[in-house]
Length: 112
Length: 118
Image 1: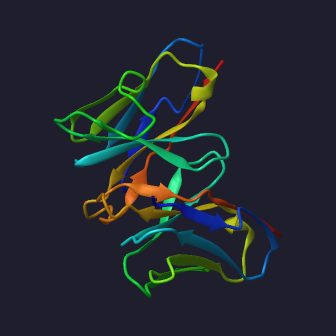
Image 2 (image 1 turned 30 degrees about the vertical axis):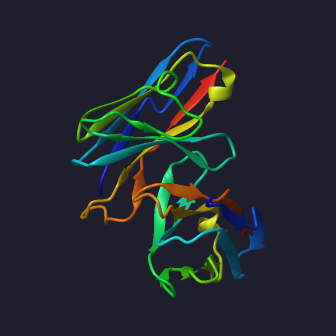
């Protein structure tokens, strides 16, 4: 059974600091996603990672995937208040072209 | 940018009643998905809706409780039937990207319907 674990579940940090959110999954997968959700809003797609060693960057966010370790990281560089949100990772189920298994989410608060 | 809209955006309903949620997409899509997100929780897939076929429900969800329609390639509805307070959640529709404006291999989400059952 595919399970996805995110940690930490809650993170409060100061502006300007760096931090990393981790996403572990239990069985083989060929795709991993990171989404952002602002309070009371829907989910915004941030990154799609489709191969081992994939690294994608957008502004202060960088995501990477290690399929051998079954681990993805979302790294935040020099955090700013606008990045405060809940971040979800989701892993594609190998038996399905579309089914995603979701992590619990990491609620990130960045204090000015 | 692409538009996925949902109606209603929120509703407060009485126990035992039903609510139908609409999802409209601005382009034709093969697959549409319905998710539930309970307060402060992650997402759970309810069912997948393909046009012209019966919806496929995930474990723990049944058609009698969550009937789904998919009359064409841009529209779907989810009904939450015989509601109880435990059905209070955000209900989200999503679509699989099929190329521009939404790249493939990713699901894109509507704004959600926030349902409160009293």
